[in-house]
Amino acid sequence: MEIEKILSEFASETKFEDIPSEIVDLQKDIILTIIGTTIAGANSEGCKAIIKQIKNWGGRKEATILVHGGMVTAHNAAFVNSIMARALDFCDAMMPGMHVGSSSVPTALAMAELVGGINGKEFLAALIIGTELSARINSISVYDGFDPTGICSIFATTTIAGRLLNLDSLQMLNALALAFNRSGGSFQSNIDGSLAVRVIQGFVSQSGIICAQLAKRGITGPKNFMEGIYGYFHLYAKDKYNKEALIENLGKRFEMDNTLFKKYPSCGCTLSSTDAILELIKEKEIIPEEIDHIEVKVPPYCYKLVGHPFEIGSNPKVNAQFSIQYCVANALIRRSSKLSHFDELNIKDPKIQQMIKKIQISADQSLEATENPGFSLSAHMTVHMTNGKVYEKTVTIPRGLPGNPLTKEEHLERFYDCIDYSGKKLHKKSLNKIISIVKKLEEIKDVRKLIPLLLFSP
Image (cartoon, rainbow, N blue to C red; front, side, top):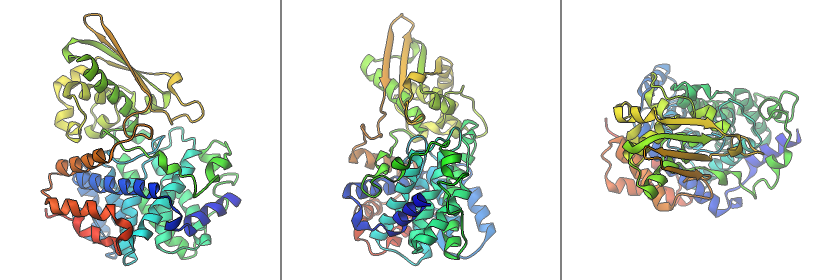
């Protein structure tokens, strides 16, 4: 259990002072992103029903349901807050589809309330170490249809909860081992457009807190949860044992530096296609009515997730978020891709539906990352005009991915877009206070100062 021991010691013993400043800044961007998406997604389909259910479950009043108010058990507060954070699919992500921030930030906030408050340095350290642990495990994973969020992000939430409960390295090992047994989730939820996509995000937070609490009580997990015959390497890495990628330079090289901040509110696998059509519109002044048809080629991994023919099911927003056809048609007709474009009335716009019929999606193995299938977001687009002209565009790195990052100004724009979409009439002083607290988080004595700023009147 050499690897398990190294990971648990890293999770429990790394100090804030050991973390590079650029990684601290990255984590602050994640926090502000999730605060924005939580506020924006608070009234999305299913959220109020889940709030009603967890209030019916009852229990101790340990942590706050954000935006809506009310207190429930910490694991259930993190559960629903994570669902709200993920609801619009505008949160951070890591290839090949792991969403961490929508679980890590709500988990950390709920735990801060549970333990009676923590300072900004402890809060940031827990988030960063938890996120890095999941990022390392994600980098060696071969999911093949398993949802990376449900399978891997739970190691982040468990680490975060464990650190804030002051677990020692042995207790942390057991917490992570218990988390291994709670890993689960399938991309079929995304393909079928179900609300389970966001509920899985909640499961990750809920289970992470439970695993840490059980470990603190002395409940043990399989000590060889990574290297064992039926451990993580076997189940979720297809027996591709890559010790170096997992633990080499742990705490010095940060895999979480590969975080994606989305320019558009849809699945990461749709971003390059959206970029491609918007760039062609700008360069060639394309008029939608003069298009004969559009061909889009993407890696096989992306094709399986978002390349299927677009259909409006029981959850149109999810159907649209996970469809290249819809995202390209929307960007082409509306010249942008915004949160409101994924509302049901906009999805059903006849102009969009007519354009979707002209968009053909196919898989192209040459666009795949050879060493890490599922880690490429490339797209090649060919636009055929009715006058015979043909325009092509290849996007290898979409906006928001390392190598083509968002600016600080764009991060703030995303935050304000989320607030505007929510319909909440927030005073500029309140927004500036949220931004100021996040910016200087390591100086804050008690991060619970954020909670009142994230509650709103009905």
